[in-house]
Amino acid sequence: MVYVAMGVPAIALTSADVFAQMDSLHGDADNADVVDVKMCDVVADVVSRFIEEVD
Image: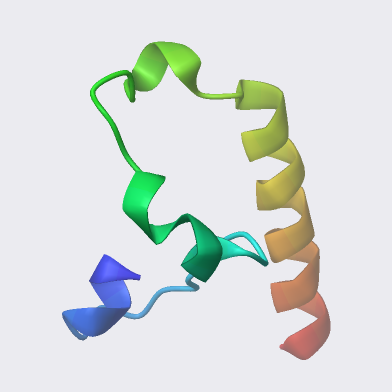
């Protein structure tokens, strides 16, 4: 979302209940070690397929 807000073309992705979690979205424990790489692959695949179908 930060990229979109700065005018950079992007697709903003978030969870369905993001506003219910606003006070705890990021914390001190957030770092690259806790990234779910398999989930990132799934999301990238879904976004790629979406773009291909819209294009």
